[in-house]
Structure formats: C-alpha cells, structure tokens
Image 1 (cartoon, rainbow, N blue to C red):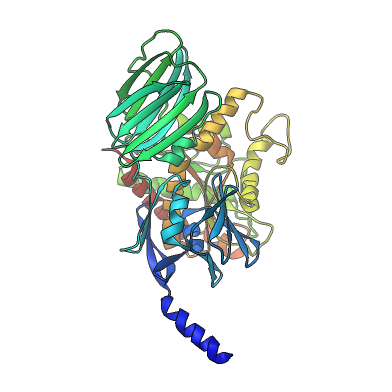
Image 2: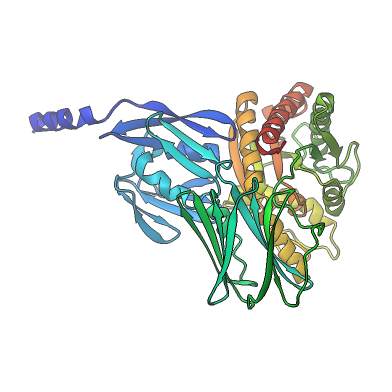
Amino acid sequence: MYKYLFLFLFIILPSISHAKNIKLLIAGAEEKVESFKKNDIHYISFSEVVELVGGTLDWKILGHTIEFVEDKNRFEFVIGSPYFNRNDSLFNMTFPSVYKKGKLFLPAETFLRFWDEVIFQKVIWDASSETIRINSEYFNVTDISCTKKANGLLLEVFLTSALAYDIFVTEGNWINISIRDGMLNRSQIQSRMNSKFMYKLKTHQQNSTGQISIRLKRKVDKWHHKLQNNPPRIQISIADTEFELNSDDNQPTIGPDNKIDVIVIDAGHGGKHYGAVGQKNTREKDVCLSIAKELAKLIRKDKQFKVIMTRDKDKTVSLEERAEIANKSDCDLFISIHANASPKKHVKGWNVFFLAQALNDSARAVAQFENSSFLRDQEPAESVDSAPMIDYDDPIMGIINEMIMTEFQVESNDFAIMVDREFRKSLKIPARGIDQAGFFVLNKVYAPSVLLETGFITNKSEEKLLKSKKYHKKVAKAVYKAIKRFKSKYESN
C-alpha cells in the first residue's frame, strides 16, 4: 500500500511548483500575493487579494464552503470543486478551488474573468509577468446618469476624453449610444439602472467599440445630442416639447472634477460629543482633532491643495453643518477621522471605511456607534436601532440619499485602498483593512469620502498610541501620501 502511495505522490508532485508570490498592481501600488502553480495553472491566494481590495471572506461551512461578498455581489466556493455560485447563478472555472494554510486559492487563468464581469474596476491577468492589474483607468466610458428636467429627460454618458460616437433609436423606445474606441466600465454603468425612467439598461463591448442601450419608459420622439466638456460627456436631451439645452446648464458631476485641489478634513465628534473614552480617560474628540490638525498642517505646507476643516477647535458641529461645509466648498475629498471602541478590551487595529451598505456585523456596529451622537440630536429622541438612515418622510431626500450612496462609491473605495496601503506601511498595529457601512457623516456629502478609525481607544496599548503626537503625525503623513496618489490618478491636467 505504501509503495503505491509513494508512487502516486511521485507522479503528482512534479506538477505542483513551490509557493511563490505574484504581483498585484492596485491604486498605484505594487503588492505581493502568495501563489503556486499546478499543471501550468497559477493559483492565487484569493484570501490575500480580498484583504487588499476589500470585501468580506467568511466560512459558511468550516473547511468546506466559503463566501466572498463585495458590494452587491456574492460568490460561494466549495473547496475542491471547480463550480461556484455568483449571485445565485452557477459557473464553472474548470479548475477546483484549493484550501491551503488557512487560505482560499483560486485559478487565476479561469476565475478572474468572472470577477472582472462584476467588479467596478478592470481586472487583468498577465500570466507571462505573473501580475494581476486592478485598474479603473482602463475605462474611458466611465458612467452614465439619467435626470428629469423641466422639459424632458437628460441622459449623460461620462467619458475621460472626447470620443467619436453614434446614436440611433430603435423600436420599443430603445436609445443606443455606440462609442468608437470606447472601453465601457460595464459594472458601473449597469449599476445606474433606474426603474423610474428605464425598462432595461444593457452594455455591450465589441473589441474597441462600446455600446450602451437604454429602453426608456417615455416615448423617444424629439431628441438632441451634443458633446460637452468639463467633464467630457455625451448629453442626450429627450424632449417632451421642443427645447434646446443651454450649454451653460449646470449638470451634476460624477466623480472628482478636473482638479483635485480641495480637501475637507472632518475631526470626529467635538464639543458636547466626546465620542469614545479610553481606560485612561482619553477622549476620542481630542484625538480626532489632533490628527486632523496634523493632516491640515501637512497639506497647507505643501501648497498643492486648499484644506478646509469642519472644526479646528473643541466645538459641537452637527451632521448638517459638516455636510454643508463640504458641499459648499465643492470638495474633491472628504476625510472623517475617528478612533474605534469595543466592549472587548483586547480588540485592536485600524479600519478604513467608505460609504455603502454594511456587509457584516462588525461594520454595522462601528457605524451604529459613530452615528449615535447624531441621533441623540434628533427630535423627537429615537433609539439607535429604530432611527432611520435619513429624513425621512421626504421621498426626494430618499432618492438623493441613494444617489450619494452609489455615486462616488468607486472613487471612495479606490481612495480607501490607497489609505489602506499607506497605513499598512506606516502603522505598527493590526490592519483590520477596508470595510463599508452607512455612516451618517458621509451620507450627505457629494464627494468621494472615507471614514478612518485610527485605532481602538478602549485598548490599553492603542489608547497610549492615540494620545501620542508622534502617532498622530504618522497617521497624518500616511493619509497625505494617499491624497497625493489620488490626485495623481484622478486629476486631469
């Protein structure tokens, strides 16, 4: 028996190469991800990829079934099987998933294309250089919007630069936009499906031509189109009565504008809102303000940006005031600074959050705590559990809130990844990584935004760090490096 076992191992082992690292290029940084080769297929540690990109990876059945959740997408893998579920549809990646050293490994050559179909950024696998590229700059047709105007409907297709296009209307109120040399961010565009105005929204990429097809609920009779700048976009006005869209008509901008030059720093809590309090009576509001001031000092010293603080002293600032400061400034980034808390004193680490529906109990708990001070200000008083996300009887505010929740999600997630990279390099405390939740303070800001939990004030060792000016400067320096990387990536000269 042992002879046959030895012979079996002798046959299969040559086909499995030793573990090594592949490169993951994301948000302007190069990371290493563990991998191994088996029968000329590269297996990548998807557990490590998720740590770097965001999302959650949880065992449903320990050692057997594992679930990956990212934004609105859910993947379920069975160890040893080539089949997986994506949003309740079954797919075959040809080669089985592998469990090794507590990590999930997936075949890069056959799995990444399925992930690319639903992620907001482009996923490219290059086997020759053993590199995964996750890149939003790959796309030059980035987004769409559909807005009700006084005399009709305005469709806008957002571009990174002027591109040649054709528009044609077909039976059934289909309006089709064909863009030459257009690479569509299909996941982002399809996320704009609005049942108020549309029956269907489809995208199709054929080599270097991208097509967006929208079946509208209103009759497409009189319509006009033009190419606009600042930002580059195709405008299609579908008229109820004959009208011309003024070229100076102010339209909402999706994503950062052409210049990344206004940064709003939001020092959490303040005044009557102490935030969390540590074992040695360190107050979160004081930590937040000190870090915010250090970051503002760095930004002002470099003179590349205008910096605005929602508070620069110990005072109470309401949610509405914070959002108003950000929105009136036309800010390009909104950064809210906090310290975390837990009833479990041993819990450690920093987090970077962006605005989206929470995917796990930990993120919900953090959002609930940070939101609680705003809820206490509401009249009549409500419990945290019963309080609605917004005000609350106004349907228009509900639509606006949903728009904000999704409009800057790609850029916010991208900036969160950049901050995460810098924190991992600079902060010598555990990395809890990137997560998402419904924070009130981000929920009313019309800009890419993140909320930073810089450590656990309820943990004895991290409370000591959070009282330290040296640590405040480290946090500020890491965030500023991420801001400059964001500027480099998104700014149009």
